[in-house]
Length: 306
Image 1: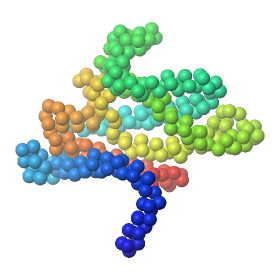
Image 2: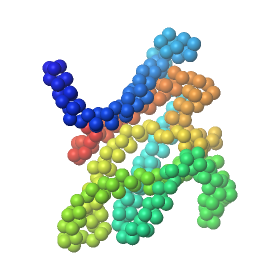
Image 3: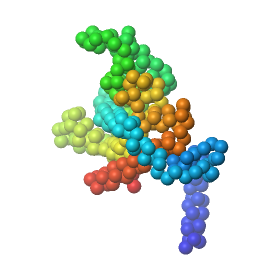
């Protein structure tokens, strides 16, 4: 049996040697920086002490997990993380799909390129600069605040109020990612068979009906795959942007699991084991949600990750 396997691998390598050479650095990167560090997750079950090291630190079992579940912060962190991801799923995820569909309908090529270029720009700006711009826009004398005051709102620094944080985060997320994220959908649209459009036109379908009955079904598998991946990270959200935008006044709605792990594990208290336990809980829930979303998609459609 082993000889058959080794023979098949050698034969496949000879046929696709350049593909193997190209994929080797990527596989090595994931092995060294994604899989090997996973062994360090065992400190979630230990009272890790730097002086004793990874192996000699005493075992404490589920203590850190129980402490986290019983803590005052548990439900606040869980709610904030889930709500931000839910808003992303409802507003940020469909935005580039709609944008790509509308962009595809534009006739003027020059105007289309200008629109694409303008919407791509925020992606290439440093996150620190982006957050600085957002902070300025929503400050007491910012452009957005001026606009809202003109509409009748009382003048105030918007980021100083916890009830505004999620709206600011989601709206800025759409502005920052809508252009770049639409690229994958535009690529999928370009792969739709032109004969389907011709058949739809012969049946009397206008541009709107072609978009809904030809273009949208054509890119549906891509949408489903990206939706599954998004659901698989419902307890994970980029903490850099939140750290740059939030402050103690907005912790009630802005503090999420990742920022909590950062504060407890790497800043003042250096509770490595506790922070690792929280991160491990988050990763486990994400994995289970990914498996469920993939199973559900396979049940109701022909598209799934595996």
